[in-house]
Amino acid sequence: MKKFEYWIWRLLDAMIFVTVVGMVVLITLQVGSRWQGGSLAWTEELSRFLFVWTIWLGMAAGFRHGQHPSLNFLSAISPPRLQPLLRLLQAAAATVFFAIVCRYGVELVQQQLRYGEVSATLQLGKWLTTVPLVLGSALAILGAWMHALAPIPEGLSKASVTEGSL
Figure (cartoon, rainbow, N blue to C red):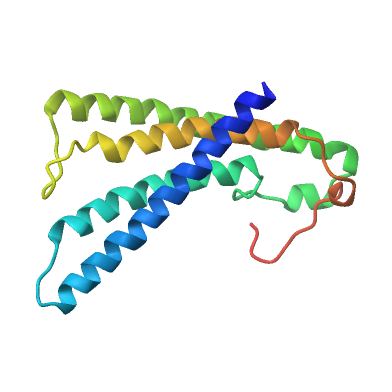
């Protein structure tokens, strides 16, 4: 199972890398073409597609490392022996939320395929912007549980409220 998880997250990291590099290249092309007096309209649309992929895949990667938004006030004031339970509670909440997002995402993909919805410029299927929502939600659930079930490092057994956290 560890090898399977390893390859899933490596593939995810590679996909995030490709989408970010793709966005940089496309936006550079777009800016360069405008300096030359023209505009490559398709670069804007394709960069938006890649941006959606980056957001959802990056969010899933964040859950894998426990870098997701969370209310850690309760963790900060609770005894260390409750920390594992609180992590499980966070994973359960994430599971409920992302299961709902995933379910409706699947329905939206089906609808987009059924009606043949396409993007304005490139005429690509709109489902290409909804698939990352489904994929990211499913991977966020996996990542949340992996983080929840991972051992808590000694130095972090007592959570602290950090600047910028909820």
